[in-house]
Length: 68
Image (tube, rainbow, N blue to C red; front, top):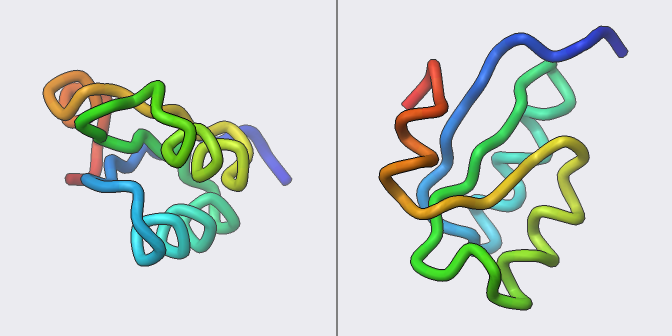
């Protein structure tokens, strides 16, 4: 797959957010998750399931994205 240049923020790290992140990553997006606790175990598991994704506080995640 080519290097991702599109950036999308997803607020939350639940099952729907994880599935959406996986789908968007497959079509070339870098995913930024907005989370209340970016270092929580659950959040880190979601990030680990989406290659190239990262978790941040809400403000940082939204600021990093092209698609909100």
